[in-house]
Image 1 (cartoon, rainbow, N blue to C red):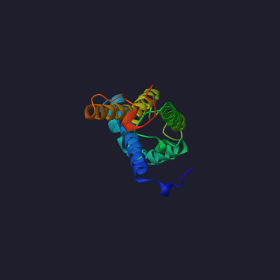
Image 2 (cartoon, rainbow, N blue to C red):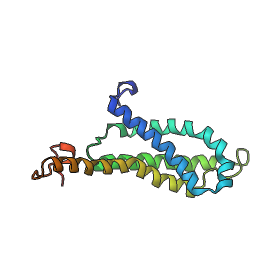
Image 3 (cartoon, helix red, strand yellow):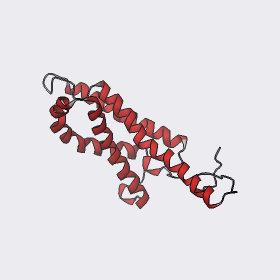
Image 4 (cartoon, helix red, strand yellow):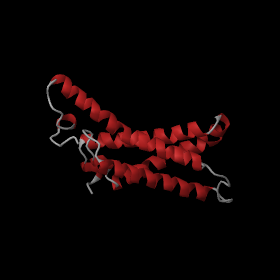
Length: 162
């Protein structure tokens, strides 16, 4: 594994993006799941929980080396790493929720299963979606620049497209 401080500027951008969309996925899953009263009840605890979870997620992303993926194309190994990392995070939320339901802690579920499922889908979309959105845009730019050119790969890579 690469030392955390020896990342390239592009890799730092990937890490920052992944951390930001993790926070967005958590907040969006709470917003989709709970009504106004449920959000108000959980808001203060969510603000306390979110920074720690984002740091934990950054460690999981580093463990699965999400920062090493190429934004020029979405490979199956990259998507599988996203799937594995997000699944670990969702299972961690589930375990934490069952710890919090203990009578001497909260006594009730903080997330709930539906919120965790929503989080899983949103996080997969937020992390994997930009890979798929970026690649066709690169092909469009190259084809417009050279109308008769045969697509060689995404964003000028020599890898075969199919």
